Length: 338
Image (cartoon, rainbow, N blue to C red; front, side, top):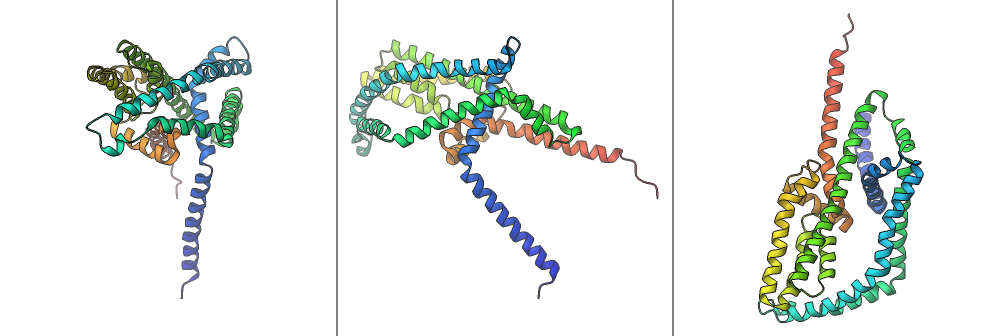
């Protein structure tokens, strides 16, 4: 027979397990919302310095509106003018890509029989037919934009609301922690976009000089994939190198050297200067964080993996400081005399 104390202990264990499983289930079900909110907060950290600078000359809501408009207009322009041309060139590139890999003698027969152009046509038709998928994607983008806007204009009120739940003696340290996390996220996003722009520009100039077909499309693809940490550079190089070999073996070799040389410059010179000390993560942990982020949340997880991983040491350091602070505080409290 179990005693009442043992019964209570078992019930507590069962309750803790059930509560953990429910929490994990809710987190998984709400993963899309969590990713959207994390993305919004990181983008806000990126845009906030610009809004703060504009706030000196106008009200914050107008500054936030101006920044959002400047952010949206280029996207609308690209979607309306460049994307149709881009898609047309993608189909042409897919045809050349298929023809090239079909004549590669060292590839297995399985790969030589792949028709990339057919896949691009089917993907394009699928996107056109999938109205619900497109509507869902557009809706998520609109929700993300409005979330960013309202966080930007209500930053102070949101902070005051959150600070009510933080003990007064800890607010200064929490404020310092949030400021450091904001700096890490903002510097990462701004640096990533800047490096991606450099990548696209350099690759376009190189491919144009080498007369690789579809240089503009390949450069845009390389710039977009360069946003993804670690794996992006390799993904962006593959189509360009294959198409370059369709021109001539020398062009293919020179294109390979172009991508390899740029990556050495980016990794050894550009990234350390752009990111400075914001992302102090050893390569192995960077790789693991990207893999975990990709498995759990797809491309969005891969993109957000590094700033989140870079924030973890700061958060851990904060909790160690808090523990040390509480220990010192307890030592300073005089013991009651008997």
